[in-house]
Image 1 (cartoon, rainbow, N blue to C red):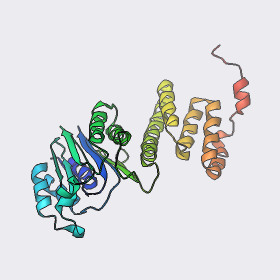
Image 2 (tube, helix red, strand yellow; image 1 turned 60 degrees about the vertical axis):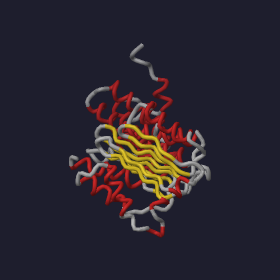
Image 3 (cartoon, rainbow, N blue to C red; image 1 turned 90 degrees about the vertical axis):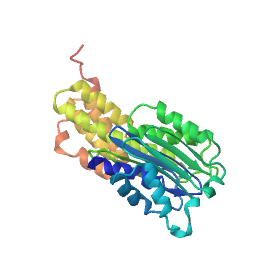
Image 4 (spheres, rainbow, N blue to C red; image 1 turned 135 degrees about the vertical axis):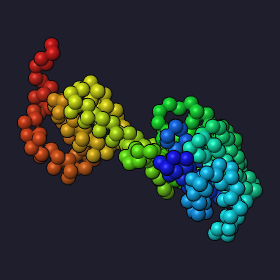
Length: 299
């Protein structure tokens, strides 16, 4: 295992190690990226994450690492291995899953897996939850975080946990690290998955507005406007995205768009919005009315 893949294995192991209660999760590695998404998290043995990582980094296959983890669990927090559900996926796509007797006694518990991914849960509404998650992960296009999130949403739509929902988390690790890594969690929410999706989409918005800025600086107007449209569609009211979008639109000479983005920024953050609008960079900016009524030289 190459050194930069080591933390990727940890991401899946840490969040997918949970005792019986009500949890469903998916862990996956796709080429050079690995990730995990979990809806709710009950008691866990926190030592299993770093220990499992160390075992796999030392060359143990997931199945061997899992056997060692279970054997040396130590009844952490007075919960033995029969109360745990543990899943591991390594960067080579190998998987290992264990569901203890206590977990199997919940409303429904089980797992589904294939090359590079494992879906598992306990206390679920039924087997359709895991089937829906697996199907969504395999069918969804886009980045790993999008596929993981789609799997969670499909599981929830298929019935999710038998006791309801409260929290959600998503972690993705890449060789590049920040800012492409993701580590998001939503706690004590009445709508954890929509809240988690908003966080992921804000991440995409920020990456898109950066691309728009770079394209504008290179004179790629078409590319800049395309990336800017994506960024503003996914911004979810993030003032930082609106500020940078306004700067990009200013560079492109899109006066109406500049005013629109500044207004959205001010609505999200009135103090910062006023400060930004007062910046000398906008001194010669025409009013939106003037810009809209000005002759179009392209006609």
